[in-house]
Length: 480
Image (cartoon, rainbow, N blue to C red):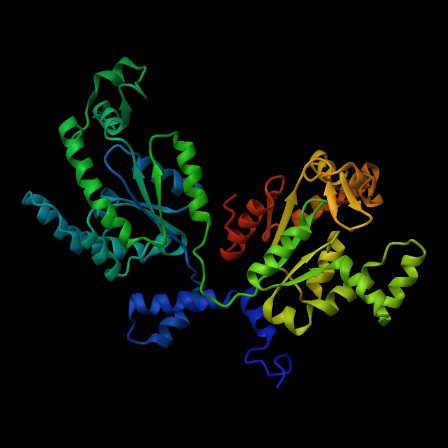
């Protein structure tokens, strides 16, 4: 039997619905909760989760040597994303009376609180209130691979892990100058944040555990444990240099938190490339179609084929084109819809360029159930586009295309055969670019959740690699 006639195991409409409503991600979340919580009645447990409309939240754990800025960074993340800040002191304040009494017994005996007890306090806090609903940031207490393994076995699974690193000399300079106001616990620094008030200065004392020898000892212990810690979080961690302004560190962290891990769920790419005339849409569409086995759909080519094949829609389109008129949106969407609903597009996915050209066409495409999974705007300045197109010439004898700057003909005889395409004249190009920019802002707003703007004024393969990485990975979360 012909492969195109063979019955499909899963109709394409089912996959589209699953992707639109994120059913695969929902199933993954529910299964994770079952395995982590191990409820006696799984059915009732799942019903409770669905009734409460619980969702996967951001859960961050931060590791770093002393004076690397863990506390400052954790509080900045919590303030920005409305998460709950957790650390040793917070756990001791918020924990239940039974666990608190047990912890105080160890402290009264001058013994360190065992890791197992910290784990129970952490698990208890993360399973209630705002931590469960919004997410949390935990300033890492556990410093060994074994302790992290126990934490994960206990059911505490951070979605993101951040490792702060810095030179030993930088950390010593930060720690040695640290001072604490003994009246209210405010922190100051002899070099970076020295108080102006004489009264505050008189009440400052050295921070405990911040001598040079102690910092070096803790730094070496952290560096020794770091490879093992990274191994436990190898799929969702980021290492950040702590020796830079805190605003830059926060920016990198937010970028990391905004990106979801790659999903193993079935995925049918449906890509729209938008850009001005000469921005490279055709080139990128060809590369993407070849790399992901997508169907390369050119709107202008579809119209030409419809006219050539003398289809009913093509005949209507021809009557407009013969009079030099623009095609109505209804005719264009009909032609595009006929192609995108064919079996190869529905099963393999597609990359569409040359359409939509305005918001109304974009709405028509969505109304037809042909919504894209990703939209890319190829941004190129008018000067660069003119530099690309106006020097293009075609050899009338061989049909070969030359660029007067980058690929000139080798002989003067060949130069005599070259002719410019009227479409590449400066006035024509400028008009086409202006028409696109007149609609660009509205299209960008319409596709806000799916759109990415790329600098296409660079090597075409660099642009392709950027697009490819964005197609593979889920759309980043916008925290603004």
